[in-house]
Image (tube, rainbow, N blue to C red):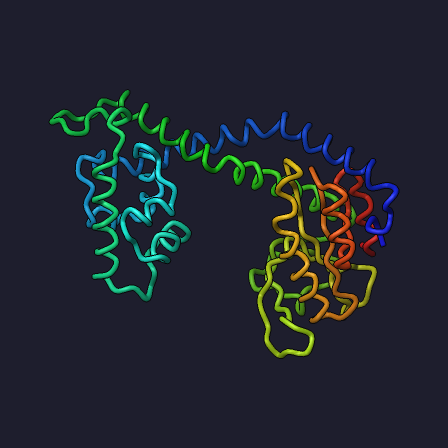
Length: 319
């Protein structure tokens, strides 16, 4: 074991991990948020233009611009959560989730059903659009450039406020992957570039990010499932037929949310064991707020980890 059995060291590691996350957050998180705000403001302005500055929100316009629906939810008073819009419009349960997740309409839904949902959405928006943000609504006047910029900025602030945690989480994940890539590249490993790479075709001395791994759902079952793994490394120190190293990058900005996904990690670890035997181990790459309760749960599930503040421990994985 690398760290899972070093219980007496957990307290010091937790404190060092929290300090590292806090230093990163203060130095880099504001810039990540600002960058997202700029791009979001541009996206809002583009949607307003496509919808003719909201002068008339129709099913036809929404049909041509499905990506605008999530933006419009932040144009109302009060801003609408997805479930609230779903309830107000009596929408098909999966319709709104599918549209906002993919930017397109459910392929199996008829055009008539799509337009029925869009009609309901346009009626809700027509009643709740925030006229303090869009003062040209209900008038014959066209908005000025200053009014459009102000409106786009306000809506972008609302969107980024709703997405603040995902924005920070994504920036942190990108940083963790970059650290691992630098670590591996410095030891002669090459990043796999083949889009169709798989565990079976990976070559020794290569690694891949966010690889879908075909795994057995249960040890005795023939059923399989594709599970995404953040980092897959084929050790150059082991034979070609050896099982790769599987790593999940994890970061957390507080202690309260770390337990929400630990069951998912336990399931993923079990599926890797079902597929690759005892060598199919899942490791975590941790930075941030992970308390002893979280660590104890993972250790009990047979999951070990490497702390970001001690990244050289990756060498103990046979890399």
